[in-house]
Length: 114
Length: 112
Image (tube, rainbow over all chains, first blue to last red; front, side, top):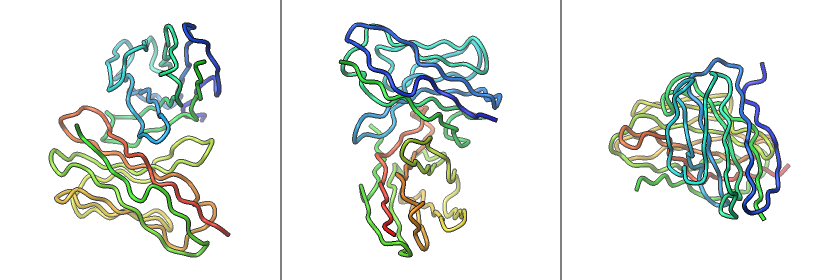
């Protein structure tokens, strides 16, 4: 049972490049989330999904897109990377809506935009 | 803007010391309070999800209490061990904002 798996672990992007952060979970959780953590700050919600085909914006969605074609996968797309997107990104999943049950997190992706 | 405050920001203790830290959150529209333990280079892992005022939860040497009326939760670690070194995150879930609001964390270092 792998839990939540994120790839890649590290990435350096140049300004204006695009990339997709992959996230997959094998726990059959309906709810999935993308967070970012900036130095000295708490985790901020970027996007979330309550099931396949359904996504919604979180607190800081600008510059990102997501899709949820299957229960298992929830990729995060960065278009036109900017230095402000330098951060550590975490994918998470839960059985019920966030807040009501514990979230299971991936190991994170450290992204640097130069 | 909803705010979750954790104190202290960092803490250095000796092995065997007991320690505690605080999470403060809005006292209105309370649904749940989460505690996570986050070791460097690993995933944050859930310790507790607390929903009731006066709730006390325990996992081994770690315990937590909850006061929803005054808006705070304490996390206690009894007899700290070097493997307890981690950042401890709390997160508040209220009915109005739709998502977990995380604090900045308390970074605990336990020296052997």
